[in-house]
Amino acid sequence: MIIPYQDISPDTLDNLIKEFVLREGTDYGLEDVDIDQKINDVKVQLKLGIVIIVFSELHETVNILPKEQFEQTSENEPNW
Image 1 (cartoon, rainbow, N blue to C red):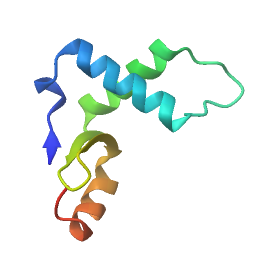
Image 2: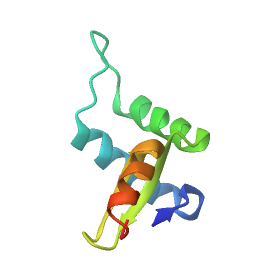
Image 3: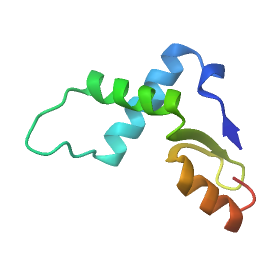
């Protein structure tokens, strides 16, 4: 199930994105990028619809996924 980012409180959204960025271990190459910039980058991607927030009923988890990946996955896992 897709969770619209606009329905999530700003603090909760920041924490969700922060957990995602730290878990994913995003590599920005030779430049160091601080956590606030990484969070902002994900927010921009959410606003543009590049990534979405999804809740998996099957796994009872929340995740941030590229929209295309979700669409491909949801064909195989209808409980997303």
